[in-house]
Length: 318
Image 1 (cartoon, rainbow, N blue to C red):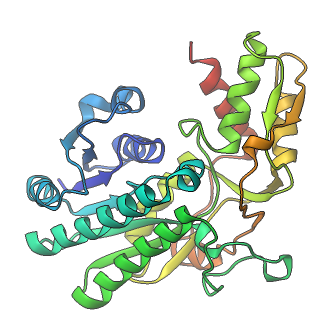
Image 2 (image 1 turned 90 degrees about the vertical axis):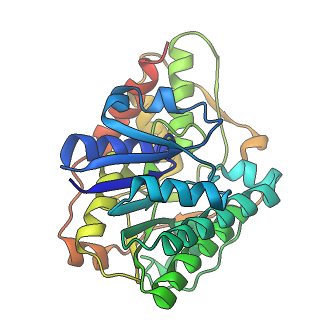
Image 3 (image 1 turned 30 degrees about the horizontal axis):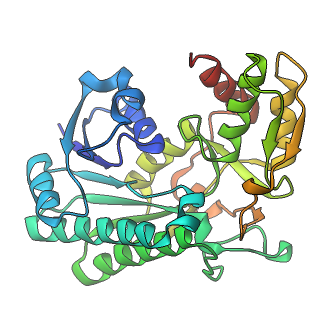
């Protein structure tokens, strides 16, 4: 049986990817979990008996080499990163050091051990920065102009992955994911809205606070997003980037109204200036035709499905 190794398996995206692989593919799932991780039990509870965890800090090259030697993966999905944008503004050095070092250590470990896996680098649309309306939908050829430290770190990760493809022939898949709806990632707007609505339903808060509602996003359900990572490994060309995103183009404010409409009680909302980013990317509409033409992929979940998924997740948390 072939093996897949997921870095960041205990995180919000990695845990969903692990669930997808366990539920749908005939593959042995391994994961990198940090020694001090506190999220493993919560996010991996349903599949904990179906996966193999390797405790490893990817910032430690020796530990990373040992993990690669032990797992001997045929596929590697690199999701491990500091991804909280607010932390990126408050502690940029830590974000840059972690995201860049863990990536170069991973690729060096693969090179040193001498295996030849397919490596899915899970990048982000944040690398495009602020895009004018006349330049949407955004193609893979659009200039890369990251405007925050998180985006800079992710672009550097992508360039490392690309350089190991060109320099060493590593079978690297490069994807740039646009916004996804993921209830396990509490810092993104969709999850924060859903959590606050449920808190209001329970009488635990009076008002839903929010930041900028004018930004426009093209949303994809996390369950669809994680499936695309697997499909990309089967059908995409090595060393070239692919945009991945959903079909639902919506402003943050309109998404909030959809959530409010599904609430069990009236929801009052107001701006909290502390939730406004110093720099924001307000328009993310991708051209995903390159990925669709390569794979034939179509999303399985509608926006309405994702709204239900979000609210049901938070209503189920006691």
